[in-house]
Length: 439
Image (cartoon, rainbow, N blue to C red; front, top):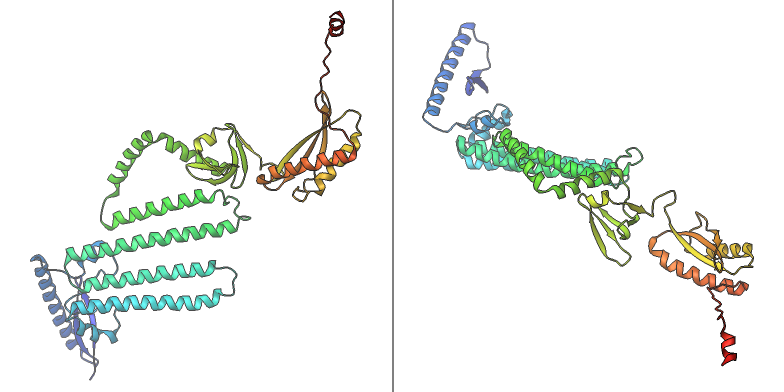
C-alpha cells in the first residue's frame, strides 16, 4: 500500500517516520508513537552531542540573526514548508550541497525575475490608458523591490543549504543582508524623489511643495533615508547604536564650533527656502550694488547671474542679513523702464503726453499689461519734466528697449516741432563795454 512521508518537529529538530495509511488498533498506534518518540529523543541527543563537540549546526547562523528560514536544514532533510512533490528531488540533491545551493539560488532568482516580468507585463496594460509615466514608474519600482526581496530569501536559503557552520553562515547572511539594505536605501531615495515629483505636480493641493521648497524636502528625505539605513546596518551586524549616538553628539558639538559659518549658511538657506524672499528667475539688486538674475537657491549659497554674464555666489548668511530689492516682485511680474523727457516751456503738454504714450504702445516689446503711462514730474530749470513708464517681460530687454524708445521719442518730438531744451547760461560782463571805450 502507498506510504506517505511527513515531518514531525520534536525539540527543535525534525524526524521522519513512515505511517501506513490503514486502520490499526489503538495499541499499535500507541506502540508506534512510543517508538517514534524514542527515535526522536535519540536523534536530539546526538544533535546535542555534535553541537557540544563544536560541530556545525546548519541554520543556526540564520536563527541567531532572526532571519527567514531560521529552522535548521541539514542531514538531507527537506524543509517543512517544501511541497511533498519536491521532497524527493531535494533529498537526492542534498547529497551534493553546492549543487543544491546553486539550484536553490537559481530557482529563487528565476522565480523573482519571472514574477517581476509578469507584474510589469500586466501592469503596463493597466497603466497604458493613464496619461504620463508616473504610474508605470511606481509599478516598476515596486516590482523591482519585490523581486529583490525574493532573491535575497533564495540566497539565504542557499547559504543554509551549504552547511558551512555558524560563523561562516552568519557572516555570509549578514553580508547578503547588508547588500539588501543598501539596495533598499537606493530604492527608497528613488521613491522619495518620485514622490516629491508627484507632489510638485499637485501644487494646487499641496501649497507647501513648490519649486523653491523642493530642495529642502529632498535634503530632509535623503537624511532620513540614510539615517534609517545606517541604523539598520548597525542592527544587522549586532552593533549597539547607543555608544555611536553618544559619540555622534560629542562630535556634533565639536563640529558645530568649528564650522559656525557653514552652519549659519545652512540655517539661512532653510529660512530663505521657506520664507521665499526671491525665487529662481527673479531679478534682484543687493544693497552692496550687485544685481542680476537668481539662477540657483542652494542650501549653502545663492547664485546670481549679472548682466555681464558673470555668476556671483553669495553665502546665504549674507543674503539673509542683506537688504534685497526684488524687481520681479510685486503685483506685476514685469520689469519697469523709466524714460525721462524734458520739453521747452510753452509746449503743449497734452500733445507731449499723447506722443509719448503712442510711441510706447507701438513698440512690440513693451508690455500692454500693465499699460504704458506718462507722468509730468515737475518744472525744471530749463524744461518741463515728463517720465514715460512702461514694462518689459525680461530684464535683459531693458537696455535695448530703452535705446529704441529714446530714438523714437527724439524723432517724434522733432517731427511734431516740439523743442527739446538744454541747459543755457547767459553771461554778462560788467564794465566790459566801458573798458573797451576807455582803451
